[in-house]
Length: 221
Image (cartoon, rainbow, N blue to C red):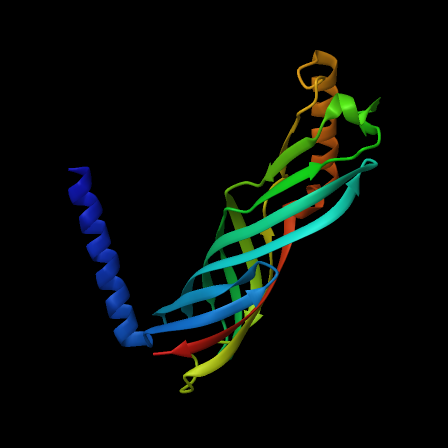
């Protein structure tokens, strides 16, 4: 029964999409670059003043940084799937956008210092710690709001540029740390390591409101 209802819903959506495409301008594809990385988009004109966009972006980055006096190597892999709707209230390219970003971004962090490190307010030697590893993740679903300029279905030209400015609400990052040294299972150390995790989350909490700037070069079929 559930499978039959799912198939029916998919057929209805496909019929609506096909009808909307035939009546209001069809499909477009685009290459996209910006603060979410590089990728592509599929655009669909569903109503005279409403477009839908489905995209994927990726961007790897490796940087060194210091948090609480501890130097880490941050290995970031930004992987997102934006799903947005663009509303055109005027007869030009200005649009308001809203939707969600499926966020598969993750960050690995590690330190292999040969000096003593302060973890959660307590100093430990390199022999005690070994190496410290961690990973950071965000909420998987991030609401998005923004505005921009450009409409793949607004003119007769098949090629054009669409730009966006907005914010994604990623939520506060979640960090998990672990050490490889002989002190790794010590109860007091584990408490200090938890405090270190909290300090990193607090320092990186500015990322919960992530600015989204992008430009897309589109081609309309």
